[in-house]
Image (tube, rainbow, N blue to C red; front, side, top):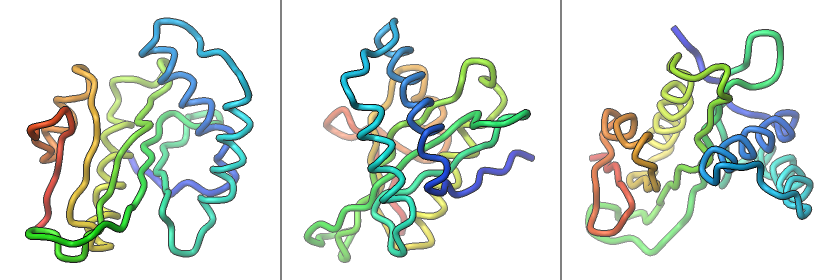
Length: 156
C-alpha cells in the first residue's frame, strides 16, 4: 500500500523539481529558468506552512531520498450556489511523477489523499485540467467532463 503524506515547507524545492519534470514532459524539453523556480520555491515554503491552507500538496517519498510524486491543490472561496452552498472550490494541479517512479500508483496515492482532504474539509467541488494520459486516473476517482475543458468531482 502506497501512502502519500502532506507536504511541508521543507518539500518546496522537491515540489519545484517535480513541476519542472511535468513542464518538460508537456513541452518536450526542459523549461527555461527565468527565475520561476526560485519564486515558486519561496511561495511554496510560505504557503505550505499556513494553519488554514489555501495551497497544499501531498507527496510520495522516493526510495533513497527526494520525492517520487506529488499532487498540489488550492482552495478558493467563491459565492455559494446550488450544489455548493458554502462556495468552497478545490483545484488540483501539478500532478507529477518522476520518470523513474512512474506506473507504480504514486500519483494516484497523491491525488486520492488530496481529494480526501477536500472531502474532509467540506470542499464540495473540485476542478482540474487533464492531459489525455491523466484522464483515466481522474475518471477512476470520480471526476467527469464538464462543458468546458475542466473535469469536476462533486460531493453530496
